[in-house]
Amino acid sequence: KAPHEELAEFEKKFKSIKKGDKKTIDGKECVSYEGDLTEEGIKELLPMGGRMQGMGDAEFTGSAKLWIDGDGVLRRYESDVNMSINFQGNQIDMKIARSTDLTKIEDTKVEVPKEVQTLFDAKPVEKENP
Image 1 (cartoon, one colour):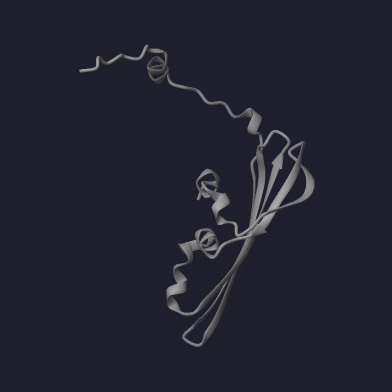
Image 2: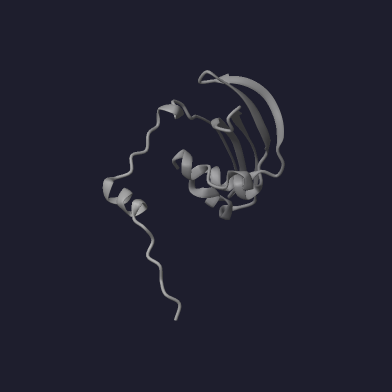
């Protein structure tokens, strides 16, 4: 998933969260926030959405860490997720560690097409009450 999709409602993936260490990322002083993830949150971060769990008894563990700068902008996030399953007498352990840096945020520009801008500039039509 793209970062904006993965981060949608990311806060709901945490069991708990606490303030952590400081670090400079992309030239900005950031504070980390970290915590353990819920089982559902872990499954959402696993490839195949944790569908392997239907093959046997599975255990899920994981944590995540977010770095936020002084302006409240997310600069980096990391996740460590683990799944352990016994499938037909075979032990399968999956460990995935991911780190995503969001850089050059200040350089991002949004251009609204002229056709759309005219919709924003138009005066609203007032409806008469019956």
